[in-house]
Amino acid sequence: MPIFAVLVSLYKIVKSFDDIRKDVREQKIESRFIFRALFASLNGLEQLGANGEVTKTRKSLEEYLIDKE
Image 1: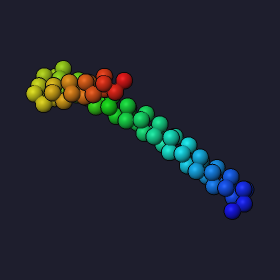
Image 2 (image 1 turned 180 degrees about the vertical axis):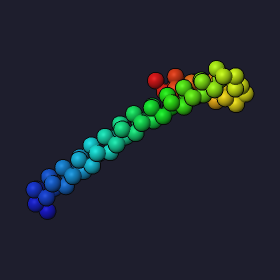
Image 3 (image 1 turned 90 degrees about the vertical axis):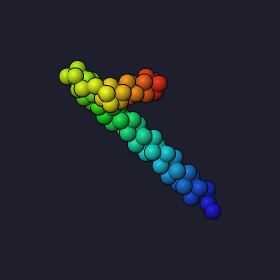
Image 4 (image 1 turned 180 degrees about the horizontal axis):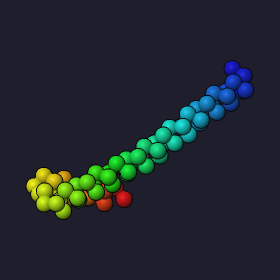
């Protein structure tokens, strides 16, 4: 296999890894947005007087988000 073919293959592999990293980064941003929206919704429901599962889930989500940072 000529050296040029090896270099082209290596470039394609590195490019694929870069694309995967970019996708993961975008997914993290989207996930943060969704978690914040969910947290805000649960917090609003709790302020309106919804208790029980809403409170448990909000606290659980808050702990999860704090542990992630």
